Image 1 (cartoon, helix red, strand yellow):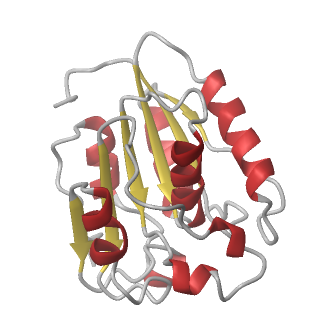
Image 2 (cartoon, helix red, strand yellow; image 1 turned 90 degrees about the horizontal axis):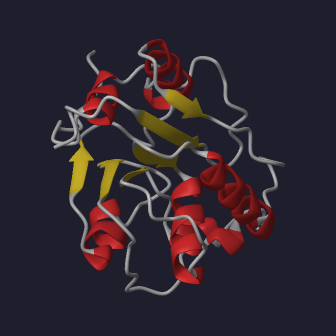
Length: 198
């Protein structure tokens, strides 16, 4: 449990076609954590409409290296950035030894391979030895992961997985402009990741 940790830094990573809209829960979370005095890095990754995996891996390394030391370091990746993280793990990219990771709403291989812009983000071969405590949360009805995130990622990776009914892709289209449960998890890793209040 990390609720007693006072010094934290967060790296928040967006997905495909995400230009960090102000109304997205990742912006909401960044604002709340910053307001509580934590360091938050929420970069606009290059060319989000037509991302290059190699470029994004370089950016990931750069932002990880820039996180301050001396406290808990946390990564929160949504959608295509979940796959970015898994590719970094598969390649042994330096700097992945953070204290905990939250993977949110990863799209499945079948979906990614259907779009030339993100086909190279299709998941690397499993199993993968994840470098630290990792948790997965996804919607039960995510149109970008029709196989289900538990079957596609949670079970093969052997990580704790929470499936939220009716949460779809956990994005603005699903009503996730705010998400109190993810803020609670950021402050205490034993917090349950639940749907946002109606």
